[in-house]
Length: 392
Ligand SMILES: Cc1ncc(COP(=O)(O)O)c(C=O)c1O
Image (cartoon, helix red, strand yellow):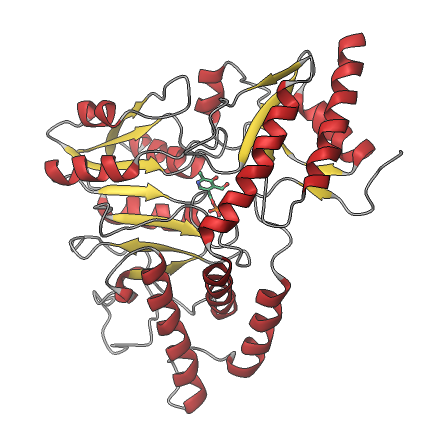
């Protein structure tokens, strides 16, 4: 096909950013070659150096998210893992939870599981026609037995950034902890855990934080004292005791840490600091604006994103009228070498409310290495696909 790019035009950055910055990967491998031993477990210099690297990365993560306590940075495999640790550690039989219909399955499924087991009850608040949750609706859903509010910071289907600061303030006034799923926002939206009264923040390294897969974390506020361990094992400290330590961060970590991932995360934080997350976000949003405008001019495209893209991350969803998004995705891949995500994007309730269930939508998500040319190629491809669909 004419104009078919030699390398895929990658617009699935909300699934995972690709490629990662070469400098981040290069430095990670070099550092891991140098200090890749079990952090802190051995009594030798290299183990101490590895442990200090981990500690320093906890400090960097805490600083990045506006937290004052690096010991409350828990390393996990990803956001899903962090959310599960938070749910299992914070919820008890009889508790009620408030969440939203914007959530990803990494929130919906643990909640559903706990409800099926008869442990909790929950209510999910609706989002408005523009894709935002009203903090007043969250507060209205809080009951005397509500022990947790959990909100996605940025929707992975609509890209809308929720008013977490306002929600956090209202939750704090009512003494209800707020858990934030920052999977799609961390790395492009500034976050201030302490200032926003966030009790726990789940993040993943491999999306906009530009780290490799397999590393994420839970950042806990100092007030969160009564979170229970849900995994037990070696921590490298108090080894004679049969009881898993209650000291943070080890209370919520067990087993050997993902040192290579932590090194990658450390490098990606340096990269983001140098690039400036506001600048990265602004550039991505410029491309998103161009994409949205171009798609809105094509006959036969249904767009599920509002014109005003403020308070958004750089993704949008659309459909070719009369065509299953899976077919559109296959054509984009096969005929145009353009990689997008199609389907429900693990957020089925959003599609129920948009009227796009069960097939879902085509999601275009922009990363720091996309260019204007990529957007031109996508618009050209979508025009052709929509024209064929209209004729068929
Ligand atoms: C909003 C949201 N939450 C959570 C996750 C889970 O992230 P991870 O797969 O890295 O655990 C995703 C990933 O797509 C997401 O988009």
